[in-house]
Image (cartoon, rainbow, N blue to C red; front, side, top):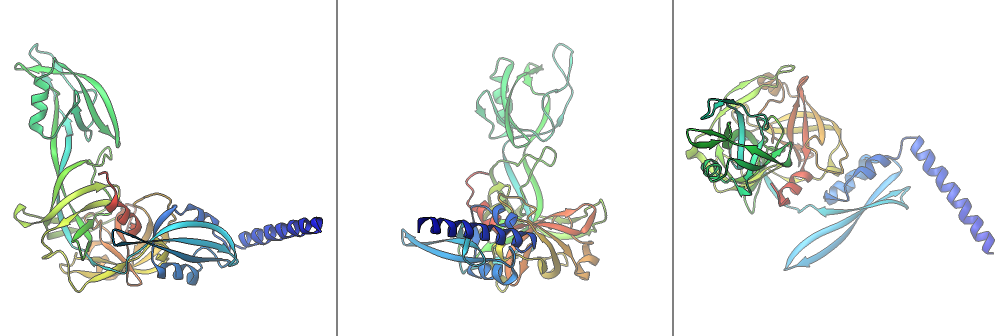
Length: 410
C-alpha cells in the first residue's frame, strides 16, 4: 500500500511538471511577471478581478484575494494576501497587498511653482581665487551639483554658516558631501584671501522649478506632484530638504517638443501666490500639504486610486491644463512594467490626442506629474518624455506615489 501511494505521488509530480511545462511553452503563464512583483504593494478588489478578466498573467493563472482586517486604535487597517494559482488550484506565489481605500482624491493636472530650501549648500560652479600669497587656486575636488552637508561635523543649514565655520577652522577642514546620492567625505585645504578662508566655490541653498500637481487627498489636503525627484540636474543628486513652498503658477507659453528637443511649459509664479508647504522630495516625487485649494483642484474632478494590477495596455487619459483649462487627453498605454522596486518608468504610453499634439507636440518639460487615468481610476503620473519621440512618455504607478508619501526620508 505504501509503495502504491508513493507511486501515485510520483506519477502526480510528473503529470504536474508536464502540465506546467506545456503551460509555459504555450505562453499561457507569465511567471516572470508574477515573481517580479514586490512582496507588498497596493491593490483594490476590482484590480484582482481585472487580473482574471484580462488574463494578465496568462490564461492558466487565476488570482484570489484573502482579506485580513485588523483594527488598531479604532482605525481600520485593511491588508490582504493575493494568491496566484495555476489551473485554479496549484499555488504559485503569495504576496501581501494594502487594500486601497474606497475613497476618491481630487485630480490635479495644473502647473505649480516649486521652491525648495536645501539641507546643505549646492555647488553651482568653480571660481578661480588668488590667495594672499599671489597664487592662483582652482577647486580640484568638487563638481557642480555636489551638495555640501557639513564642515568639520557642523551641519550647513544656511550659506551664512559656511563662511562662519570656515573662519573658525585652522585652514584644513573635513567636508561631508553628496555626489550621485552617496555621502562622501574629504579633507580640504582652504584658500586664504584678504585674511579670510575660502573654498573657491559658488554655492546656493535653494532651488526652484515648475511641475504638475498629481492629486490632493480630499480629507487631509495632502498633495503629490511631479512623480520623480527634484535633483541638481547634473550629478542626479536628490535635493535634501529643510522645507519648501508651492505656488499658484501661470502658464505664459509652450515650447513644442521635437525630436531630441523635449520642449517645455513656460510658467511664472509670485511669492504672494503661495498655496502650501513641501515636506518631502524623494525618488517618488514631491509631497506636502495645501493650505489653499483655490485654482489647485476642481471639486467636480475626482477619482479613486487604482493599483498596478488594474493597469493594462490600451486606452487611457492624461489630465493637463496646457490649453489654459483643465482637460482630459487621450493616450495609449503601450507597456506596463512589472517592478519589484520603485522606478519612475513604470509604464510607457503614446499621446494619441490630436489636440495635445497640436499644442505641445506630445509630452514636454513641466508636464511631469500629470495624472494618468484608466477605467475611471487614477493609476499613475507622467514622469518623462522620450527624447527621440516626444509623442511617447513614461509614467509612474500610483502604488509608488502612495509608498513615497509614507516614506520617512527625503
